Image (tube, rainbow, N blue to C red; front, side, top):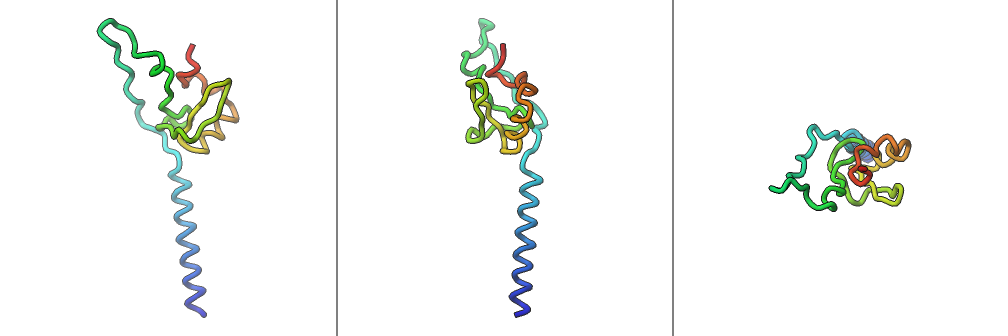
Length: 104
């Protein structure tokens, strides 16, 4: 009986450690931005679609997960994790300057 309780306690402890590790490591700010698009010989930028494609999370700066998004003002805004999505929803206007789909 004692071994069963001890085994259950160990399993529970390991589960808490795994959950804690995943929670702490969920979102990490990217240290450097991705390279800017290269202009062609004529000096023109790549196609408009490429300019409006969001690849960086506006909250933490990491690569986006296309499965995590909200629609804001008729446009999809993508995030790296659910926590960033929740943070964006608190103050969306704060992050609009970082989003290519809202560039003027």
